[in-house]
Length: 288
Image (tube, rainbow, N blue to C red; front, side, top):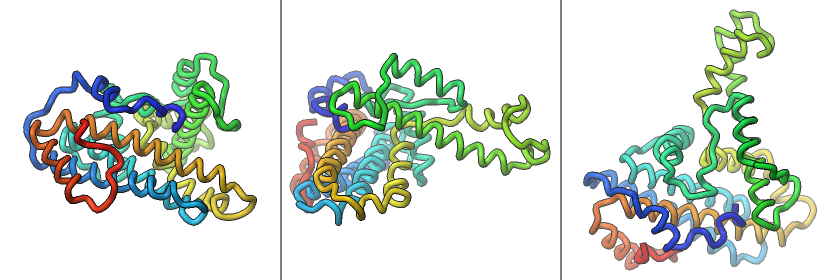
């Protein structure tokens, strides 16, 4: 992701991307929520920027992942507040609403727009074939250029879709309909219909992937971030990449929000933060 956002999220590029975005009807409460969430996102990005200067990344790498995730989560919530004023209270609901209000409307800049709606196996296979277009790179090789980075991102999107398939299939297996049908797998048309009723409305997007990654890093993979062979240099790069990606996503959210809130209030928000924030702002709101 850090390779794919590099050089693609400057102010002028985002201004051009959102140039056709219409200002919504005044909604002071929704604007206040957008400002609050943007401040939370920027605080987490600033934390990541500060972590980049720490010589030994091992004590802070898991905290860096958490900061990256919450920068992403609150930036997405800022976009939702700016979009419709909605305030989802769970991570899963935030991912669902963000899909409907931001991704499907073309309001997320690449690569944050990648998603799959309808995660039945056949559809996932079709979408991935179209996305890849012959790209065979995956997560097994550390990417060094844009094509390899895209291949890795596609692989993680597919992996997340397959994880969500498995998770939802387990819910179906525990359902009354599945058990009363006497099914033991999804090979029959009737069992497959039960499964696909659950999979076809489901989706995966950047927020869903971010939530999954935060969980993996905090729980399943945690030992590899604190024990074993010395990966200090790679972890330094990792923390730097987390900062770059969170910063790009949060800047995107800020540009979108600025186009939606009450016109003259954005300058007041920018000046207020510049004067009163107790952490270094990761980007200049006055340029938005």
